Length: 493
Image 1: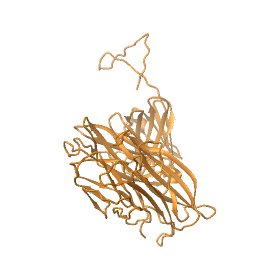
Image 2 (image 1 turned 135 degrees about the horizontal axis):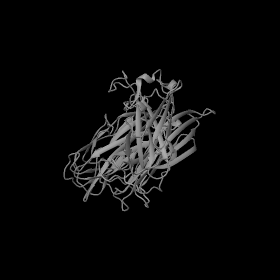
Image 3 (image 1 turned 45 degrees about the vertical axis):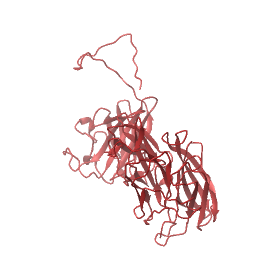
Image 4 (image 1 turned 60 degrees about the horizontal axis):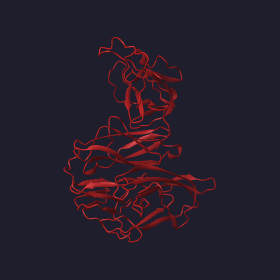
């Protein structure tokens, strides 16, 4: 059974883009269908939003709605140089499983190379039961960055994120139904679309400050053609991704109410890394560490169980004469039920993690250890009892690592399985329990926890207090502390 949803991403009168996906959430007590719609839109200001009308069938009623900002930047070609991406999550009560369609349309795109003058937004939904699963068809999960840019002289390939949870084949093509799928349906020059793999290959085009508008199934997008770059080699002017950045298309398993953390690192030896551009679900955030890495964070809720959320990102670098963008990468976050029951408490000089034994599937503490168990204080058997594995971890021992971003100090450690407790190197982890305490440089402290088998990377957070202490020594030998009287010291971060 082919995927039944047509998804469009486009630019409107204010200069914006967007996508729509839906997710069937089951029956209501009265037998009606609950369907969640995620409408992602990008304009040249965060105050704008898009309104869709029911064009055919019975589209039901809106029962709940949330809206928030997912990302914003100042790299757009409009007069105010801004774009802002928002996502509206809308719950609808649909009376029947019959097909229906919602539409939105307007003029006018900003000036484009392929003479796109207006935009069309069309969402088709069919809640009829599939013959293979007996459940309503689910829409493909798709995503793309709200604003892409490429130097005129640098060929690139864009793999459009497309995943169908029912296992259907997703193919892409240019829109070709005038005034329904597209306005003028003029295909952009300099591009080749591989319909089977949903890959768009850029070859070459003449640079000017206009954007291209590209119509795809299941999505559409636009991007800016920049003047030629001094070099097209990734890692010089154009940022190049390095470890631990996840690979394009990677699946990340996550748990309800535990934070997903995606770390992104890039290099550009002849330019300055400026920002990371992201597109993802509502309440997603981005941060930058003091070491220059970027961190994307998002916490799925109970209503997200069973869903799949694509997250796309690219890093931007700058020189005096221009802005350069890395390749686009997208990952897919799969949401499951909570696997490990735990609790983390943060103290001023240590952190305590308690893991319920019954959630560890028979693993014994004899085969569990912290990152560095050489210190006797790091032995998990010291504080554990019959119901819980308990680790009391000093912030400066047991392999605890410290990381820092613009807002926080983060102390991290993990509990892993080991074949032999005397081995220095662990192999084939059956379990990895990662936990951390996060100490804001101003205000309160938060704590976190994650447990994963294989590729699960999730976090759980709380709050507390932290104290800074300073000692002064006359030389690097640190033998005799200098006492300073009549002086008040403070640290500003």
